[in-house]
Length: 202
Length: 92
Image (tube, rainbow over all chains, first blue to last red; front, side, top):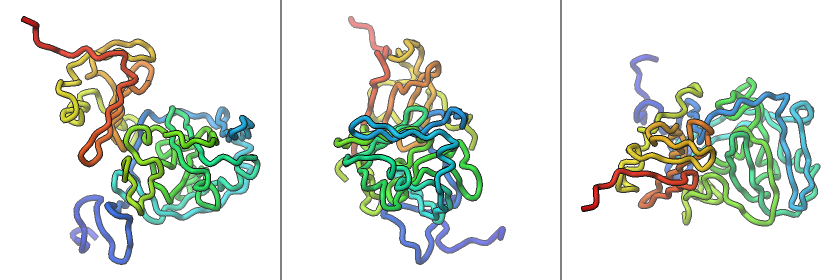
């Protein structure tokens, strides 16, 4: 393949592909860029836990063994990062949020997701249900690498990728849409890539 | 990419902040509100492979400074800094 140039190739890592519709302002990548607002936390699965806390304070908690005993499923989705790259057809293994939330009694409208290392992001609870979101622990047939959020990350592929919090630790449910790490500093509170909701007011 | 090159040293703040504040941030001294470390901003850790720029304390990892650039506007959060000591001209 050396020496061949594909039509539409616009430089290393940037290209367009005929017949593939991308969200506005996005370009395709083949690699998987690593973005992070802080150091990669060192998480021992023995110490790992995931909690979901309802608006009344009731809390469900899973340790690694309990979490991995839950039914999981393969997921193939496109990823859209607010920094303009899109990666098509990524393959994951994860536990549906429907499975986790089935054990939580709530009438909350919103979720604030927090991570090991201090990151957070917010989204409506309805965006976590009906097979739209997973806690992913596998990527491309392997355990999820720590630089991509391992041992487990949120995966909400219909929103910009900053919503898919790496190193997920807890989900707080509530009646207010509390802004997370980036949403409190200019980034859109919802982040629909097809509506190009990048910044406040978009 | 390894964890080691996820961040750069504080000199990486100079470019992104140039249009937002009128002094060279890397020449300033900042105090972390978390651990109290007081040192040149050139020594902080800058995570700029991200939707914005995040500067963290090299001692305790607390966020010192965040900067997001959007079209025609920028947002700057300095809550993690108790103060910035910046070079200023002598008063006459």
